[in-house]
Structures are given as structure tokens and as C-alpha cells.
Image (cartoon, rainbow, N blue to C red; front, side, top):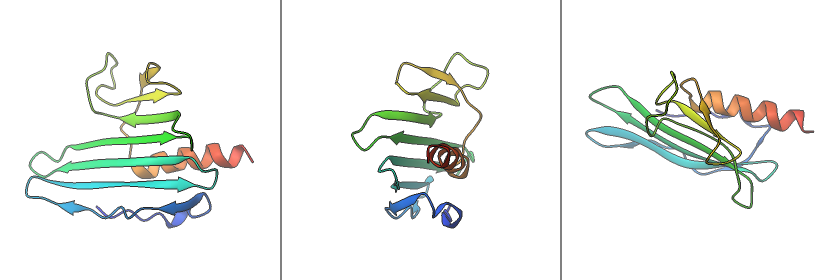
Length: 117
């Protein structure tokens, strides 16, 4: 899975390569995106070949490493959306979430960053 970040260029300062690493059982994408406000999004996606399952974590934090928002499906949560959930502002503030993609997350971050200007 190769990500095209072109539509988000206005908010991106720098990015590490988000090139997929192919393995027999999965394709993995890891990297980070630094935004114009110096916040950072850490990206982790695992595409499981056999099942088609996508395991993900999109961890957005301030430049001084404070959690802003994280979307993931790393474990079961007590919501109908399980395992999809989000951590808003702190690890302890867990809320339901729709399944997310990098494009979904970047759209949300774009809205937040452009509304703060």
C-alpha cells in the first residue's frame, strides 16, 4: 500500500518514507509525518495477507511528545466499534471510533490545523 500525501501538502512540513515492507504474511507501513505546527503523526499499518485484516495505529502528538489523539485497533474495547477506538488527549480517555485510514486521519488533522489558524 503506497500512500499519496499530495492533497495534504499544505499541512505537512516533512515526512519519513512511508514505503511498504513486504513479507510473506503481511505488508507493513511505518513512518512519521511532521506537520507545519511541529506536531507529529506516527503511522503503523500491517496488512495481513491471509485474512485481509488491517492492523493500524495513527498516533498524533505534540512536538514535546504529548498525546493529542490516537486511532487504533490494537485490542478489544467495550464499545460496539471494537476493536476500533481512539484515545483523545490522554491514554485513559478511550472512545469509540469508526475504522480509520491514513487519509481519514489526515483529513481530521487538516481540519484541526486549519481551524486553529
